[in-house]
Image (cartoon, rainbow, N blue to C red; front, side, top):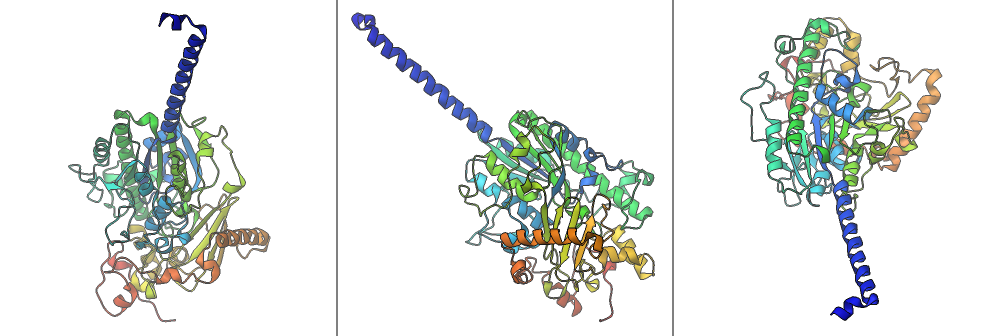
Length: 539
């Protein structure tokens, strides 16, 4: 043995083998470290019906305070042009989960649909690739989702909604303890397992406890310095706005508690946190429609140590269909490897890693919007089809069935607009011959085309579609919109848009609402008031 050790050739061989072992070890350690970076945890936080103007990081209003949303924005990125392609709960959430626009989702492009079995969601995909996935509160909803065998399917993973709080600030705010349920979710995962968790707040969805913003939130009617031009400005409307504000702030408080659980668990550093809302506030001419106030939503993203130059404000146009490909990218997957239908959106990682505020690419200089059946209440459960494009501070709409009522038929209570004091005030005023211009904006029929310059007309009040000075802009936007929709195989571009009206409504107790109601059947809903119904003369 001694003579071998003295042999220089043998010693050189040993040294080479040791060096190779060290290099191999470093290589595998490096790969493991890279895998950890590629597979961070994902915490997706979504409010229910909150407009972007009402997160205080945007400095738009003084009567809502959201310090936890602001914290995420300050430590990460604040997006000023984030849009959902459809401003209603189910189709908006379906786009988040699939990375596809509503017109690419068959039944799931409608509200309250049967979710097609062919579409795998991002959370199902991550669950099949090692992630611990689950949700609390409102996941994908409302609608019915089953697998090919007819068994219930959870599109957002296992539900964690058992733990309740003793009470809530108002009788209408959920007692669900979102943070405690998140902690229970974390306790169920293995130590090294990455996770994706969906914190789905029920706030600030209606109904509200009238006057709670003043009585329990300590707010004053005078705090509101501006009421949107398409509503009446009176104490009733201001109270309604402050009641909504109280629930926005409640969502933000729960967000803070969820973030604290994450930090206490030691997971904050390796978790990308996304905070947004599914659609705009549940008020007339907002939720369910296609305007700047409706589809333009809050978005802040934080990822400790991974976002380049945190604190940036991002003005690029981004769409909710960009979330799923971002999460696939983070997990080291793509739509094919994840067994998902082809995603339409684009990963946001290039923005997260950019050093610049203005990181505009041609692919991010516009967004597409639209709607089909966002609720029942019209004859034969038909929808109100719209497609729109937002680009260069303009929004162009095409209304494909302008003879239909955009908010639903008057006889059935304008079911596209949630009942509440602001809606009631507008309807009552119109019945007495007052503010008919405002009633028309929220409930009246629309022209075939609409064009608004949102940087000077944020409330979309001045329709420029027939102004010859804007004809070139309108035609350019319309051409691009239709070309993009054709490329995405939107059925409405090929004369097949009626398919959306034929898809069944999953609430069988409310399906064929118009016909059943007009025949005298007592039809009870949870989102419109008895006083919303009104007869109209036959045309």
